[in-house]
Image 1 (cartoon, rainbow, N blue to C red):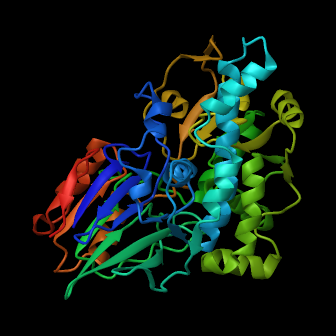
Image 2 (tube, one colour; image 1 turned 90 degrees about the vertical axis):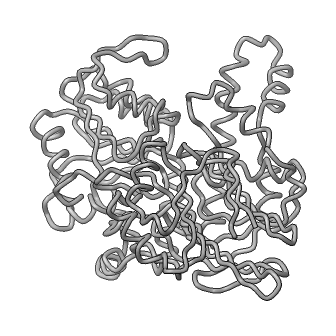
Length: 470
């Protein structure tokens, strides 16, 4: 049996791992979009698979984030006909995220072909440039089979899988894959993306039951979440400092699924406790609006803090100071309005989405603050902002950075180095023969590798590297 890491190997995007059994079965764990800026030909990288999609027997999808799910419609379009296994919330969230992915692709292509004189010619260029379209998303979702947590499912004659709650976002799963080869059983655990311990909404990640082989994420390997305060006090301090003391805007780039909901819930808790100043809070992400409703639908999958709040107040998110910006025009008017407020908008790494307008409008305002609420991959605009530059280029125009730029790990959806080791120690057993480290930059992977016992033979993934699982 062998494992080949074709994505999230030395990077944090494009998660895609191919498991091949001795009997010839081929299982793909995740099929995400790769979007590292250091690769200048990202579209072609995503368009071409390093294997035949028709040769894949089944896909296991750990969660809906686009770097794990985003290339599945392309896989289907190129001939994959098998089942895709995930949790029910992951299936629902994937619809919204994949449609949003098409919208982002179309917007980028529209700018690329803006000089085309013929509308018909331009439309054709856009259609040909897309990795996939809405029809392919529908087809892909038609191949999805949902499985509840901790319910074992025989997916092929010799392969059984079990999902465990990873605590990362709604529906996120770690997965145990049991492969039966003759009279021998082998188990391979894939963490997927793990959640942070003591999350505002999600439960702590559930350990896997001592697999023979473990494939683990290492996003924050070698790093500890720096915030000494809890997320609630930290957020309140930022609101007071920016919106009350400086009378400016607090701009929070946040992912539409997970991060936005955690921040809004925290603000609601502050409001109920009578601690939140009378400052308007705006959520400005069409995708976040859609996905937030799902957290109420799947309340039973949230942690006790969220469930108790829901029981006492009837709603996790809605409160009097919270407003939703539905149209681009409304978004622009709020961005230009001088009144102090909090704006939570996607995307979290400031790559695409409405957040770019809010950053552009406020980057040179010394009264405003931009609070990066999580990890920003190298090469993204969020990462650039955190470098402490005096000027940045936005829309081909150089702008002075006068706003306060801060970062917080208080709402991180990933465990830090200590949390990763805690999960690994609870998961690996004396029989665990190898740990493969994925979903991280090389420095983070190296730090985690050095912290894992040599007896478990930890190794860092590289794109295309084959691991023999014997």
